[in-house]
Amino acid sequence: MIKRILTICLLSLVLVSFTACKGKYADAIEANNEYLSIVEQYSKDLDKASNAEEVVVAIDLFSKNLQKIAPKLKEIQEKYPELQDPNKIPPKLKESLKKTEVVGEEMVKSFTKLMPYLSDPKVAKAQARMGKALEGLANK
Image 1 (cartoon, rainbow, N blue to C red):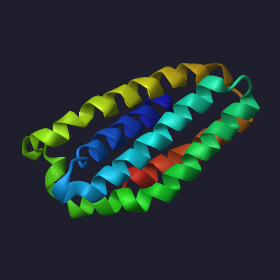
Image 2 (tube, one colour; image 1 turned 90 degrees about the vertical axis):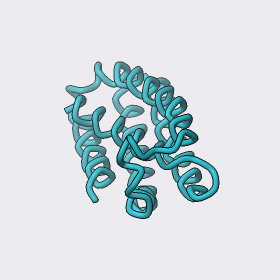
Image 3 (cartoon, rainbow, N blue to C red; image 1 turned 135 degrees about the horizontal axis):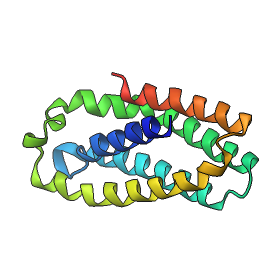
Image 4 (cartoon, rainbow, N blue to C red; image 1 turned 180 degrees about the vertical axis):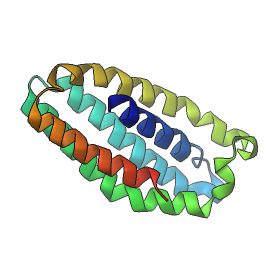
């Protein structure tokens, strides 16, 4: 389950980051920054969590924020379908991958904080809600 969630998150990070550059893609910059901010906050919230209840709060906030931004991200992906082909990504877009990689690494580290709470039923339910939010983000 965690591998699946992590894969979807990282895929989303990469897809969104492809749309982040100036000029033609100005609207994508805003969406990308907002998305990365949500992921960064989730990582920080998990890092601060010291019990299952705090983990649930972090997961639920992340899920809620993903659901809010999902329509904007889908719109960007539909508006710029050419950016889903790695061979067509302008050099300026490739630069944005650096921040995406950093945020992705932070998220991976934060999952280790989640591990001790995986057996908690409340955490499991929160993860299921997050999985649905991530699937909504990945589905077109």
